[in-house]
Length: 188
Image 1 (cartoon, rainbow, N blue to C red):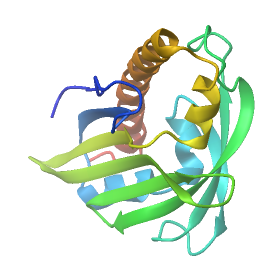
Image 2 (cartoon, one colour; image 1 turned 45 degrees about the horizontal axis):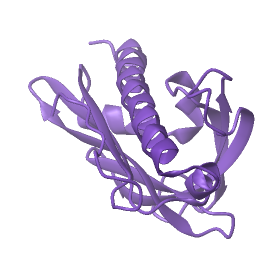
Image 3 (cartoon, rainbow, N blue to C red; image 1 turned 180 degrees about the horizontal axis):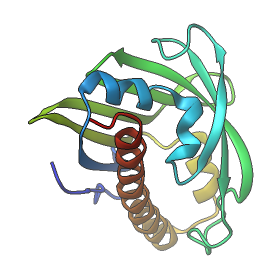
């Protein structure tokens, strides 16, 4: 993969966002999986998630629900009416294949999985693993609809471009931090 991409689609088309970043990690796929599927540790590497806890189901299994605690600084896409400070989200695990993939979808306020999906894909890569972190948003989520409700078409286009650039930067930083965490834990 090696590149980060964000959809150039116009608002209203799907997907609204699509981004990915990848990194080689000097650890086995199962070792990588054991770390990235432990969402409570997200604060060790995420740009916004500072931690959280499993609130339903068997942790890290399909159907389990995680409440993430998040924080966003004031200067992030500062012109847009996005959430600032601290807030929480609920996410449902939608794929959990040890050593291969771990994926979750952000829930709406009624507890339904939205088309806001975060994924870690892992595959063998030489003596280690290739970790790919993906984000995809198909239809606009409750949050995105709220953020863009008062925007005209030009403002929406700017928001989607600016937010897409933020996602690319965040994913690249996240995979680098995950690599550092994992390689620190599983030194050969």
